[in-house]
Structure formats: C-alpha cells, structure tokens
Length: 146
Image (cartoon, rainbow, N blue to C red; front, side, top):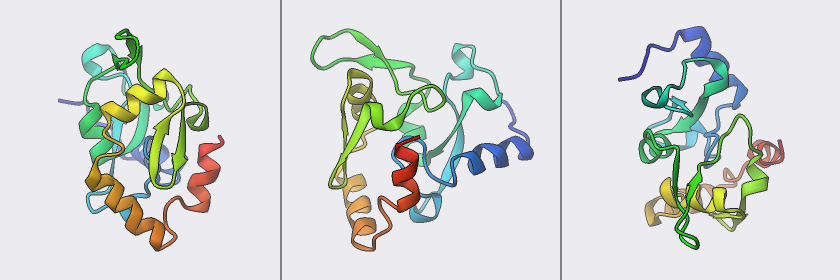
C-alpha cells in the first residue's frame, strides 16, 4: 500500500506532466481510466513520497510497471533498469513509429516491453486518438524533447 500523497503534491506532479502520462504520453482526458501518481522507485524498494520520485502515469503504465525497477534485456539477458521520467529524456530512449512506441536503447526496449506499450488494445486506443489528431498531441511532442 502506498503512502498518502497530499493533494498539493498530487497537483504539482500532474501539472508538471501537463496531464500526460510520463511513460506513454497519452493525455489523462484521452484514456478512460485517467492517470495516477506513481512512485518511480516504489516504497517497497525504499522510494520516498517526494516530488523527485513521483511521476504522472496512466492506469495501464502504472499497473504494468508495478514495483519493478528493471527487466531482463531480450538481447543480452542482463538486468536493465527502467526508464526514469525524472532523470531520463523520453526521446533518448523511445521513438514513435506511427502509434507504436519503440525503444531506442535497452532501457527503452525493456520499458516498452514491461509496460506493454504496444499491446493491441493500447495501439488501438492510440490509433483512434491519432485519427482524431489527439495523439501525439503537439504538447506531447514537446514533452518528448524535454
């Protein structure tokens, strides 16, 4: 069970992300279950409930990430840490190919695989949003570069 995150801290995290999931870049208004505050390093692993350790994540990214810190590389079999939204730049580890989110590094590859970025249901959701010109939004494209 996670520590209570005070409303002011929740607002700060959501505002910092401009309402977008910091992993898959979907906007909270465009996903039926919205977004949540998640611990990048889970409390189980000693992560604190502080601004530097919190991210805004859609329900799916948050659920699939869980308390994981890393995953095995499909190419080397070595343990690789996951993407960290506070210390990593999105565009350094991922790129969009249509609505698919592809890893550019081992960090990106293991994160995309673990968070099921390209599960058929998630691709369908992003395809519908792309047709409506809501994914990737101009703001999300700017977030990819920051």
